[in-house]
Length: 176
Image (cartoon, rainbow, N blue to C red):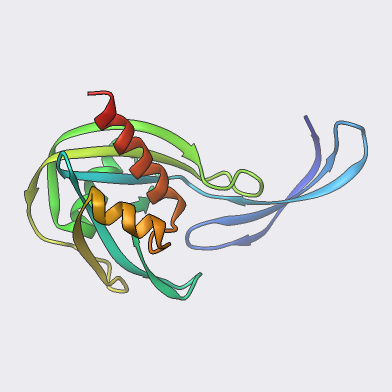
């Protein structure tokens, strides 16, 4: 464990804060820790049928390319993950789900960030309409297990939350 001696917010943005902590390590040595504070997020595996899920194609500026991923979104102030997941599914994919199951939670990068993603399975989908933010361009795409496996092998899918979500989905199918 480390003891925090001093903390200060260096940056406060739309989605996260950057905090710098002065700490004493478990040996008593001083060190600096840069931490990204994130409100948390949801990620959804929209299940179309036993062998097919819905993914999205979306441009990500941080890596400057379009990637294939599962739908996801950041929690708004005072929003619960259970409320955020249906909102994000409909916004990004244009679907509502009749059945929701929380699959688990995981940290994205605990070495420097406290973001916790709440992963959900959504099934019994009903098509509605996308409700994208003005700066979003998202294309929903259906993919079966063979296509997904190929995309993982050829590194078309490299997004960690997507790899975790797919892994959970395959585990769910094996256990049913």
